[in-house]
Amino acid sequence: MTDLRSLLPEELETLLRDMGEPSYRAKQLFSWLTKGAASFDELKNLPKSLREKLAEQTTISALKCLRKQTSAADGTVKYLWELPDGNAVETVVMRYEHGATVCISSQVGCRMGCAFCASAIGGLVRNLTAGEMLGEVLFSQLDYGEKISNVVLMGIGEPLDNYDEVLRFLRLVNCPEGLNIGMRHISLSTCGLTERIADLAKEDLQLTLAISLHAPDDETRSRLMPANRGRGVAQVLQSCQDYFAATGRRITFEYAMIDGVNDSPEQARQLARLARQAKAHVNLIPLNHVAERAFQPSRPERMREFCQILEREGANYTIRRSLGGDVDASCGQLRRKRELARAGEEADAAC
Image (cartoon, rainbow, N blue to C red; front, side, top):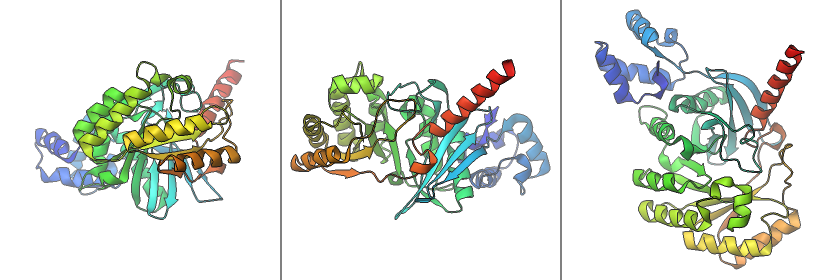
């Protein structure tokens, strides 16, 4: 059935008109959905007859909080949400000077296979709908008790691998009648699906595009990120240059610092060269250790040398502030723990 939370106002209007209802009902319905209504009984100013018709023909996606962890160090909140089909995804709310930022997931699992990431363990289960992604923002905001001012699509999944639903989500969260979060307050992170970056450039959405680069050379990047195979760093760079030319929006290179893998002086020089060519900003990320992965974060002295080279080579960079380290804030860790627990319960039941 149609998920009402995935529909734009004009689509709700068409739906209700086909039901023989006046168009103004669409505005009322969209308002309730934007406030986080999770059942038809909550649509108080709609006639009971209409609510019954909607309940027969449509559904309202709602998320159930399975677990909430709040960092004692910095107040970062991590949610594990159960979806209507029983799958689970993670959402993180972080506090910055400019307001509250929510980091949402776009898929259940991920098929990109990045070697250092917990999200890819177990592969892709399914894509999230636009309504489910909007639900991550809505229900996090309701529980957090503060308006969300910024959205980043950097949680579980590859957003551009769920292209159509992500585009629909972006239009929903940006909708003036809804949450009205400006595109310039939204960041989307991709491992570099160049064909989809070209499609996104045509949309001219004015969001911030972040490329999960993590290595400046094909040998290292293909080892860390299988999605690099068949594309390559040069092709990713060209897509970044084309995106900048089409939108005027500066791109960010996300770069997780991994000890002995991508943190050599030569790799720093290569990264600086790529950043200059793409007019990109480099965001260095201290690696979050994942139990199932062998990688370790770069040593402090190695990090300092890397930064010195970037600065000397004329690359703009920042070091991402680490938040939520005590609440499994790295993507996929909380969901992974739940999956392991469920697998253990099933094994016990089979004994």
